[in-house]
Image 1 (cartoon, rainbow, N blue to C red):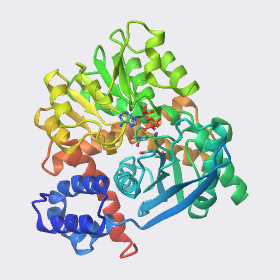
Image 2: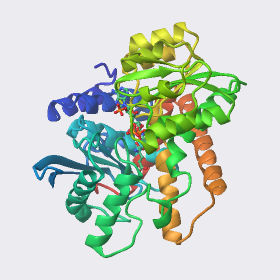
Image 3: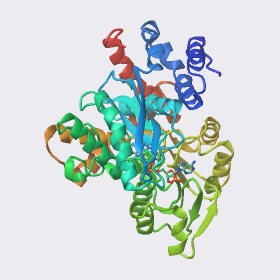
Image 4: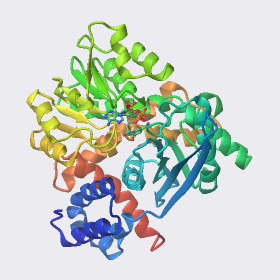
Length: 449
Ligand code: NDP
Ligand code: 2IT
């Protein structure tokens, strides 16, 4: 790398030296540091106070053993993580990911990005992330429950409604949150809002399930509106078929677009007449099966093995909503060649640095994850507010607040990009806009963390 500024390059070198074998973390830090050159020119006081040197180091990392007993009576051992990255502007906040690919570097990249994303929402939330290398796929409900109870039996002592508030991420949905919340309540003997994404019968918020996907479309709509365009009549390709992908598809359809493809880690479906979401919800949310089942219900649809092929489908708008680095430079070139005008990241860091460069160099409207997928954590913040109030807002009220938050994120991101000399580069805009509030707060607190 390749930070033109020697001070920033020095920080990057140190991050790489101190955190070997964490490529995703390096990637996330590098992207942010590359945005900061105009910030340190304008704010030498941040350099003086070591704000950036501090922000790349987590405040606390918790790593623990998670033993559980499978359905055959065999003892299994997984590794649990919670990275409490930054609490300057509020309690640590961020999801838990259960996926076999989880390791410390993955959780650190997610926790690091969460700092800026949460700041962008305008709500008082610090950044954190956690999870485990546990794979919920193919496990019985009983196995998932025993794993979640064991995971929470360690995690509970590190979290709390004003300390650290976890939520879902890949592999963690309503079922897992329910099991973890039950165990938390049992251990603490307290009914608090310590997790978000809870069920509606015990303190969950309406629209939380839909929030990330809906928010991603609201952000995309803002980018399009600024160019006098909209979702109406557009063809949309969405990767993944989990929580974020399904509700991004639902909102895109409601806004008048035709969603023609979805995927999972095995392959993708293409339905040129438009994906029927009722079928997808039945397969994914009720039966927990693979997306290829879709073609058994809709004979005109096609299934193709291999998930990256989804980017070869011609579309106007692409929403990567599966996982990190799922869209590379070649895929980006293909999207551009096929006429794609907008890309918004529902997933965290789904586009490689090469892909982002292709989008920015070709005038594609590009909504980076920290801005485009902040709707999920924003509604988590609203769930915390409702829990504190001992009250629940209606679907329409929460949806309206979400829309306004996404509008503000777009406004702050695009204005910061312009102010710092990178007009229309929302990567730089989101990194700077998210950073400023945290930096000001860290400055105000002195060298406390
Ligand atoms: P889910 O577990 O509900 O869904 C993940 C989806 O991505 C599944 O369809 C999964 O397929 C697919 N997938 C995983 N790995 C790959 C791969 N290598 N190639 C193609 N598809 C793959 O998770 P979410 O929908 O909650 O999360 C998706 C992304 O959105 C993640 O990056 C997450 O961090 C991010 N995000 C989530 C938020 C939330 O509120 N849930 C908020 C903000 C961001 P398979 O079944 O084969 O694994
Ligand atoms: O990446 C994310 O923003 C999330 N997984 C949601 C975090 C949250 O606390 O709702």
